[in-house]
Length: 436
Ligand code: UGA
Image 1 (cartoon, rainbow, N blue to C red):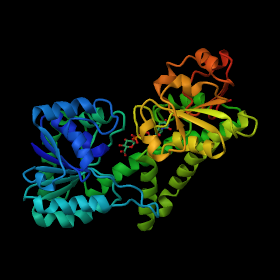
Image 2 (cartoon, rainbow, N blue to C red):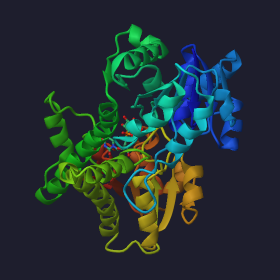
Image 3 (cartoon, rainbow, N blue to C red):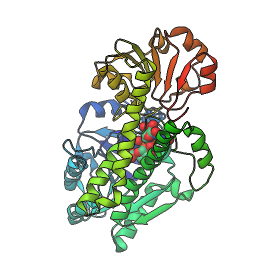
Image 4 (tube, rainbow, N blue to C red):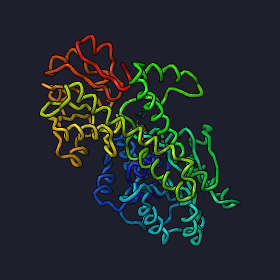
């Protein structure tokens, strides 16, 4: 099928390449000329495992192309909207400027029977508004939220755990859902749940999924706070409650909390939208979820300061991590970088290393010192703090070797990802988050 994808950021670029990889003819469209130039060469503009390969393949096959020219969308049967919905500069609500611009820009190129499939994360009610603009062209708007995780984006797009299609009522909606089934034919063939809903439900599925994940993380981080004043170990607690299938162990990783381009802004936008709907109280807990999350960054900084006797001034602190999570170079709302910046603000001589995110981090926080070499980052450090759980230090860094490089064997494990016993055995004073 001929498809267009408007917006070639994380969501759009991966979606375009993934759709070409399952046999469609896809044009990706974005206003950013340099991004389009990079993608057109078959190069991934950001770090995402597997993306480079499917971009190269798609371009070589002739099925995948990128352009800044919106008219290239004409002739496509389905037009995916994958532009960003960042947090507004002066509030919690989502900024819909890019979604509106994408839909308005597309209108002249729509033909009767086309499908406009919104994938961006939007406040509930957005699709109904957009449909008023799309319907007069004879095209149908559907809302088809995306649940991909960065770091697993290609796999999550090609083989998602569920598909959701919010469609208008009646035959028009049924036809639109069938066209989406054709688009996602490999998933449909393997009986991946395909859930057809109205617009509002589809929009809410997306934000409530992210709100639930954020809540789960903040729940365990709240337990970490209690563990810290009782001597309990939150990691064992998570293991023990996680064995209950109703609870589950995933997303119960206590540490410096969640960040990234989605969870933080999505829970805030959800709160703002609920307020507008007169139901702010229904999701009041999300403000608490946010507050718990941000407190864990303070706690990580406090652990370093306390371990160094009350001040980090002119002390070298090796910060292991900058990305908001491993397998990503994304530093948007990264708790890791926030901790680094706060330590720097307290006068520490901060050196940050990360296997993928240094270039991005440098652009936003040029005041920090970066070193690509792990050993050099650790050399003569007065304290080490792990803030992104990359395998490079989780599995591959031997505590004995690290001890031979630093000035002081103090390690704060901001992600509870190190083998505490092994580090202690190698002579380190180990501090976890919510662990004795
Ligand atoms: C999240 C959702 O997981 C995806 O399903 C969703 O599609 C995506 O947002 C989106 O809306 O686009 P992502 O932002 O890639 O995906 O990252 P996650 O894997 O959810 O991690 C978010 C943050 O939570 C990271 O900072 C991670 O370190 C943190 N986290 C995760 C924890 O602190 N503890 C955990 O146990 C798990």
